[in-house]
Structure formats: structure tokens, C-alpha cells
Length: 179
Image 1 (cartoon, one colour):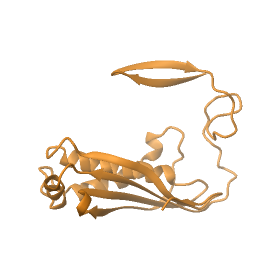
Image 2 (cartoon, rainbow, N blue to C red):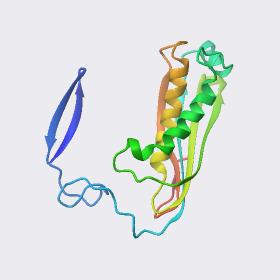
Image 3 (cartoon, helix red, strand yellow):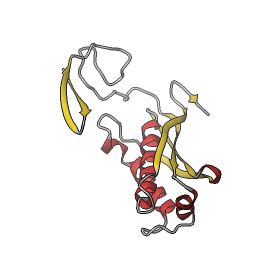
């Protein structure tokens, strides 16, 4: 049995579902229980992942305020970068079945799209380990984007975070890129 959470009109409703055993979900055993994947016998290889998110500002004035570092809280980009790096390092504390990884590199970078009043945020993570760093990149970019929102919300509540996605993964059994 597994509990799932459904959000309906501001109320939380718990449902009990019988999970059919599946070999396609790595965190579900053949009898339907959750498990942490055993990576002990896997060979450590170089792993790398990149995730991105878009922070969309409602207008040029709000975007320029962010871009010119005039938020009341200070430098939104610097705070966002630090928050994203710290979040990537804490992924295993946030996602219950993620392994703690010895991350060798984390970076948050920004592409400023002036014509669109938006910022493309990217988080790249690397390790030499038995499992990938996709979740670390996803958590890092999400928190970096949310931090930009937090730093700029006094300017506008209409800032949006869009298109959080994994764009590249290398190492291990598979390599993929959606660039």
C-alpha cells in the first residue's frame, strides 16, 4: 500500500493506492514497497547533469530592477547563486530516496534575455560516483529560481517560474540531451 497526496480546493486529501509491482520504477520493489536503490556494486564513473528554469518578469521595469540589483534585499543574483549551490548540496536531505553524493562541482549561471524580460537559470553538477547528479541539478536550479522570486517579490507578485527541466545528463548507463 502507498499513500498519495491530492490537493483539492485548498484541502489535503490522502488516498491509499495499491501499487502494482513494476520493474520500470527503480524505487519500487516487486512487492510494491518503496526502496532506496542499492548502488554498492555499480562502478563509479564521471557524471554530469544540467537543469534549467526560466524566471519571467511581468514587465521591463521589474526586470530592469532585478538586473540593476536594486531590490530591497540586495543582490538577487548572488543570493540566488549561493542558495542554488547550497540546495544542490542538500538534495539527499530534501528527497527521501536520493543518495548523498560527493559533488565535485556545482555552478549556477544566468542568461539574461532582455527582450523577453526573463532570466534563464542553469545549474550544472558533477561527481565521480555510482549514481547520477540529475536530482542535484534539478533541486539547485529550482531553489536558485525561487530565490530570485523571493528577492524580487516586493517589486511584483506576477513574476513566474517556468520550464524547470533537465537538459543534459552524461555518465552512467545513459546519456541524454534536450538542447
